[in-house]
Image 1 (tube, rainbow over the protein chains, first blue to last red):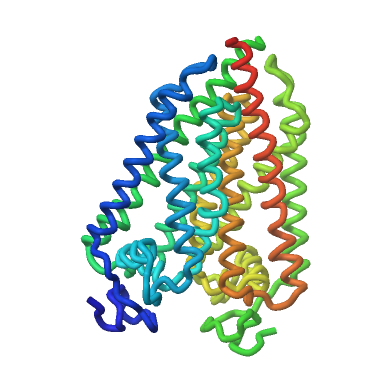
Image 2 (cartoon, each protein chain N blue to C red):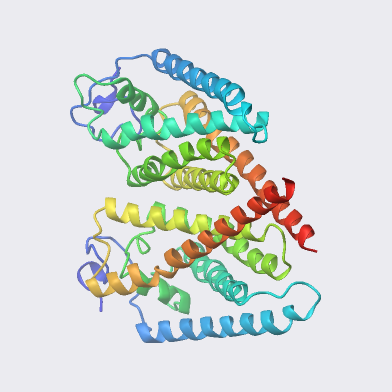
Length: 224
Length: 224
């Protein structure tokens, strides 16, 4: 599989000495990822519906329960998949690569800045792993316990996602958009796989914004 | 003033062909900046105190009025000083540099990524000029008109600032922290001049977070 430069990435003049070719196929990577995600969604949906909605507190709405599923998916992505990239500096050269090493080899075909450990990418991942990941899991707890900080916490993590995506795409554009091996990888991974992290945080941020504004409006009305 | 490489920046091997040395002294740059800032603060403080606090609406607190001064300073910084960097690609080589070109020549001594137009820096400035700048001025209007979205708007701009500062400092660290000519410039500009944009957004974000949580708490109490 390795092309010029001993690796399949673009541009081909990136130097990756000791590169060990990818062993798992895209299907072998994507199917377990989607399967695990569906399992997590099912568990969170069932637990939030049966266990959390039995007490005396107000029932969690279907929207709240779906959003809890999202926070589980994104939080675990930050704390497992992205943490694996951040802490496995030698993932391209390991003789016995893990499943996650193989994921990053695959994704690097759509954005070789992951293979070359571009500074901006690493900075984005530091923020994802240390701040957004824990905050996403805290959001599940906050929704489940109907905390009064629930919406502002969710809003802040969404803002973090949107900022990260802006920096991610703007730097790719400014650096010449030559990190992707083919239009297929561009549309499926670089655009497609990232699109939930643009669309869903935007929707949750808009929802939180509206609920927070309404809350101030009604407390103002109550004061008058 | 130009050292090895025809320019005073660090590392000295950055190539900046056609570099025109700085003509204004640090004092000639800093005094007008501080003077204008004090003027803006005075105007916003007086207008918010006399004009806006005369109607039937609830009086603006001193904290609100001080925070309006901050949004004016940071919004104008985004829309004038940072926009000047973004849109003046040739600011290092202009024969008749403007005041703002000289500001960026001076600041580049603390962070030569501005002189070399590093991609991350440009991406941060794109977000500052097109999103945070207009949003900061909108925050002044929102506070003045007691809009119900006032705190969530302020919180989101603060989150944007904090994200930008995180990316700014983490990438500097990862890239080896060799962009600064001396410890003096490191502490006065790279740390000192940026510190208000770390401390004040953090304080405003904490205040907004508390007020938003309180608002949800009281609307919950009212419901019960």
